[in-house]
Length: 118
Length: 109
Image (cartoon, rainbow over all chains, first blue to last red; front, side, top):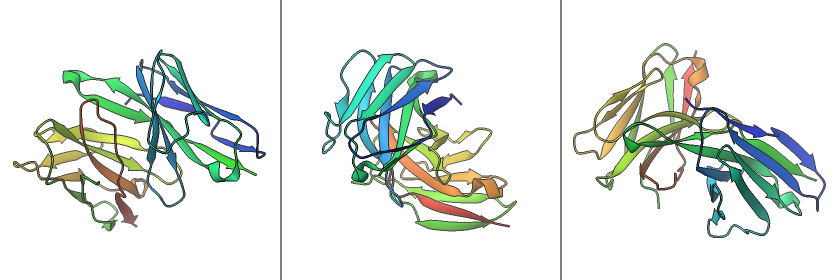
């Protein structure tokens, strides 16, 4: 399957600082990428859908000014958590959508970024 | 509003076939059945998907009933590395993936 990478894999930061997470599709081009968040013992929750060259679409309840998403190329999307607070500590996972045979679309996920805000 | 129902947990002996059921009685004609799994502290891994025909790849087989109201993911020879949470998701093309609570599969040595 296609490969999606994330960087960094984990980050610890002080409250009030901003953190940028990168998501790359390594062997395919992705016009659409997605950002998810997962709290301990819970399932993945979609935060936003990122389309190359246009503004991201945020899910209800997700603050777009706090979670800045940039999808500047077909292989890179970034999520910036601005003014991070301890409640933003979570596992952030991106995915990229590959269009494959017969118009079937498949999302491939990155390994995730664990954020701890002190 | 979950579109799928899965048992919360299952055990399977190492080396045996693991059969994971999923009910999706309200599936629409244009919705595919996707399976992903998530090993602890990792991102979800794509396994397989299908529309109405049975599918097989190097990881698993997907059996979809004729009425498409349920499906079964089969891992033919389970290993300890198959211990994970398995998610069954129904989704039409261009719709977002919505994860439920999945089935926690534990492979027993």
